[in-house]
Length: 336
Image (tube, rainbow, N blue to C red):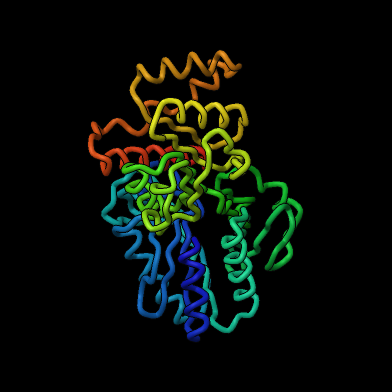
């Protein structure tokens, strides 16, 4: 979303109209679900995707025509062979797409984009609410309008959870969570592979290690922060929240236990994964239950960590961990 908003701002600065194309509804087996976006300019698709293939190509063509005609509209694509429309895609699902024109000279649009980008830079959550008829969206943060037109009370009532929501077929609201921080305890070979990979899929890596020769920014140029501190005093150096994804892979079982026990006793995280064998897990779990960690809580820890792709090298293990992080994040947001 940030790259799309940045592109909108760029195009407005260069006096170019664009079309924000958003899937606002989906049924059945569609290539992308509600919330998928792309931006189309006078030169064609600029950034983003709504699934590729025939739907995206047709949408790009329709967007180009709409930019020329200066109009916004909604269109339903039927992704099954039928007498109404045959896109050559027999997916068994339908998608509803909003084509929302962004005039380059709209000060209201510029204010909305600027407010949304500012919230993202500050890692704050917000709702991006678009009228289905087209027009200027509204940015809602902490239950209040940060920018954009006023909204009826029913919209505020419908802003719940993290799933995109279509409110009375009048407003499409998407929850933008800028808090996907990935805290990696242990700055070894796998961390060096995982950090840049996690960044490319939308996580904000933070590295924590007690060894100064490992916890060095030069090894993690894309990390948001690199912390060199004792594993026994985590709370003094970083505040773990319910939106944080935690990966524990230190240089020893003792440090793994120190980190895991503090994180679990704190009780706030979106994901907790711990590297190691099943035998190690049994040993650590026994120590953790001895200090009051429940079996139910331990059952939600991802260990051995990562998706099972027979990973062996640090690079492969990083891919398996990233895959699991993506899956958990999608499940939190209601992804199919």
